Image (cartoon, rainbow, N blue to C red; front, top):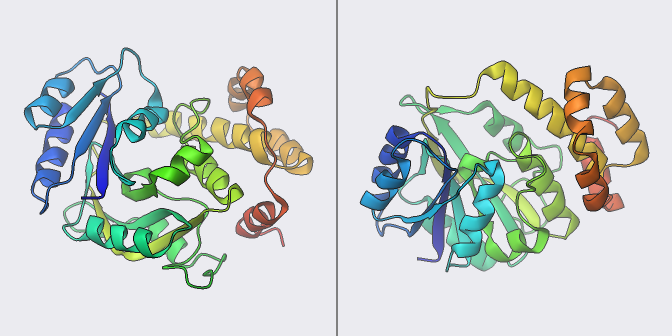
Length: 275
């Protein structure tokens, strides 16, 4: 196998057990690294019992916990799963072939099928109809976003841009990683034939709290990477509560700020409808 599956989890032992069973049923079964974000249930024991490599963290690092899993992988490619998602039987082998054939392909966004009825996630249609078109020779439409539960990365590209930024902790972290990969010249493509299954956990962050975190982080992403005009517009349109949350992270923003290259900024504006 050329692909390691990395799972970041917190307090979802039951869902994690099912995901690990589904991954173990793949042929051949891939190596799996579970990064446990300081769970207080028996998630660590579930990972050990399933034979996964466990990285038990003393505190919750949020989405950036995946960085530790990628760093520990001994394969050139990594497939992310959430603790409530897993890969179709042929997905990893197909992705490996594409990575092998396309040396500048940094990330593959797979097709996410939701629940036992296998409903396509709404994001799937957006990626399939990406206005960014398809680069010559690329294996699918170009994207500047993805779902982390159904994405695969080349370890070299991921390490090249630093992975998921801990400043965001959780929410919209895929957007910033997409920008950073594109800024360093890596291709990001949606590939319909590479499928992941997502059975959303009933133990989920309340929708309103998730919305606030994503609003805060979208503002942080603007401050981190966008031009001054966009930064001002994003700041003015952000709610006071999300703005206050972002302001508390300003020292980290100044240290990390890197404007997107002109060609990537143009692609972002196209996605936003600003032609």
